[in-house]
Length: 89
Image (cartoon, rainbow, N blue to C red; front, side, top):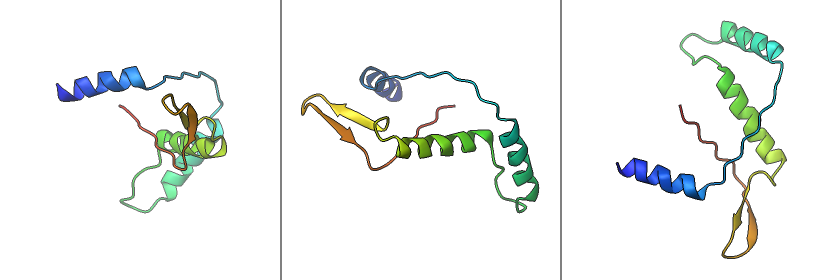
């Protein structure tokens, strides 16, 4: 129950942004499969999710205006020197 309350608080305080787009990932999928073929035995498989998360993190570093927050009390934009991605499954 404690986790549910925390999630509701976070839902109220975190701005939500949705962007939908299309991309042809045929070549990326081909390369992903090739990487997995030559990977050492016992190492984790490369997944499409891992590739997309890496690309998102790199984009947030390249475009810091997207990776910032607003402090209403201080009336200032806070630019972060880190990237934090959360993934819920």
